[in-house]
Length: 208
Image (cartoon, rainbow, N blue to C red; front, side, top):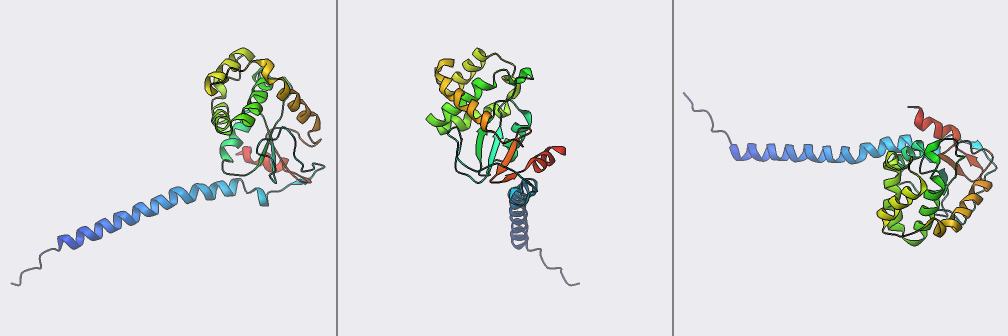
């Protein structure tokens, strides 16, 4: 009887290792690419539907990340704005902080927070980015606090010792943003480009 060949363990191990590495590489590519494809499909601003608007693309003194083709009006106390912030990371747009009417107690400290963040942006962009991320992702920890408690919270977060008086100039600028807001700005977050309003598109992001 002819003896069967001895198994080639070395070759088999190399084949298995190569297969495992290939699988891991595919998994890595999918982990990186698929979320970006989903994101691009969900936030495909360049191909999004829009309506004509009287909005004129020009810089405002209170702009954050100024000079971009798209402008997003937002508010740190708004849960939908937090959702848009997290979905739109990596997209290049100008932020305009919009003061809402105090028709809901979650917006009681919005003016102080917005003025604080505008001042922080001008002094330290890195600290601003960290504070913005915290505000949007921890709204439940601060939106119902009074002004002094929120101020203490932000100062502790950023290492500042600012008072409400330090924020008055920024607050006045934000009031001007509100006065100059386009007539077709119906809610936040709101997205505009020169002559374009993306209300329908923004609503579609949150319908699902």
